[in-house]
Amino acid sequence: MKKKPLILVTNDDGISAPGIRTLISVMKEIGEVVVVAPDSPQSATGHAITINNTLYLNKVNIDGELEQEYSCSGTPVDCVKFAVNEILKRKPDLCVSGINHGSNSSINVIYSGTMSAAVEAGIEGIPAIGFSLLDYDWNADFEPTRNFIQKIALEVLEQGLPEGVILNVNFPKLKANDIKGIKVCRQAKAMWVEKFDKRKTPHNRDYYWLTGEFVNLDKGEDTDEWALKNGYISLVPVQFDLTAHHAIQNLNTWKLNE
Image (tube, rainbow, N blue to C red; front, side, top):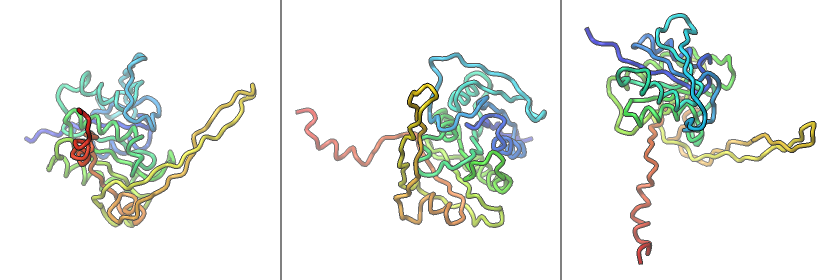
């Protein structure tokens, strides 16, 4: 009898978020599920780890069905490190992160706790996928993502991923019948044009809220932003090797050692 794949599930919205509960439900149809997720929202924490504070791990059973489900006081990356080093007796066959409440397309991948957890799994040599839905509502409808998530996860389990590659999957906010399909894309060139909203406390002390507008500078039709705008699920292969390989030859022409 073929052994069920071991699947690690995590996120950045917190262990009780509807997105991760949907993802857990889908993964239970595929394999043995272990959940290690933050005990509170950790959005936009990027690849942060906890080094100056204590970390706590609590065994929980939110839906009453999983034997191995843990909440962690740290970041999404802490959760993956805990799972690999303290909880799991063997390396998982797959790590899935999400489903994030909101977009992680384009430059958002840099700031994303959801994707950083997946990247950390990739660093550990675990095939990993981050899933996000373009709906920030806590009560967002995740049902249209279910079949697509299962399809992508099964393909990764069967085919594997190239070394050092993680998948960043974003879903448009559409009904299942309105989604045109899955499109393999590149990350769009886009950015946040930001400003700080300055205010005063009752004690006359300045404080600030970060605000901004997302600007897509990329007109290509092979990007994640184009795919999402046109009714497709975007699938972008990303990597944790940040070396700009194309620049090495040019830099070697500099007079650095003369």
